Image 1 (tube, rainbow, N blue to C red):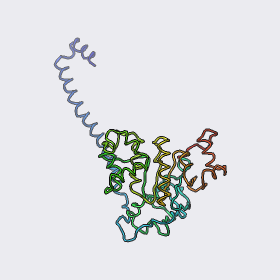
Image 2 (image 1 turned 120 degrees about the vertical axis):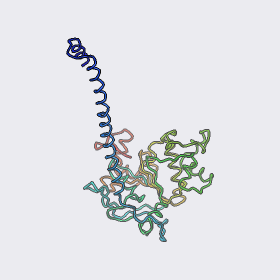
Image 3 (image 1 turned 30 degrees about the horizontal axis):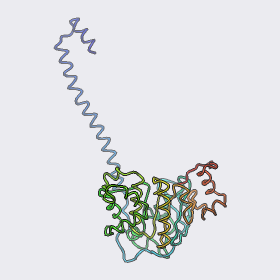
Length: 329
């Protein structure tokens, strides 16, 4: 365009003043156009945010959150009776007529392929979802006989994605029981296998936790969350791939400690195992396939049965490969 303008001026068809006025007006024209495009971008972002806000406002309130005079059961077995659950957008149930009894003092590993329903089961037990049909009992009492808040105080949930808060390590552990002493925090850290890690930090339990723990490793964050769950002394402990980011030695220490506490205190623990070597150390292994319990028993019993668990185990140790996919956590 500039070359053509020079030719026009050289040929006497345009004066320099007209060319200068043209470029000045062109610059004034581009400014509003750019502002308009920015307004369109902002409008699109606001529309998307508005949809998320409307979806949040449309979420149904949690029922029965106020404390009640009926306390949830803390003794006896955990019983799942014909549980069925289906997500609203799905036609097939994620869990289909699932029944399971877990005696007190038992550590249970839940394994299966991806999408089998393991995490959904944990969320049902945590009270995050309500079953479409079926019942959950602790002892002889239904968990919905008491308030949801009372039941959740009896359960501890640790997931793969850990939430940490500004403060120090001790404060993050103490979040589950704010009135606990330093000694109790230390005991919980030992039970979670965190104590040795904290000892190597210059400030120990007073090490700052900033920005959700981004200055800590993923494994350290998970150990802090596990210590927090141990401090809560929950009757039912639920771990949804909570050991996925810690090393094997730390995981072995955790499972050993968790098993000892569970047996001694007659609690219950359900672990969605990321590694089958973790499941092997548990009292009982539950294999879920297509929303149902496919197998139930100890590691030795399931290996001898030559079923789905045995195939997953052989695949995990490299002896063969399950043709339908080696997803075990």
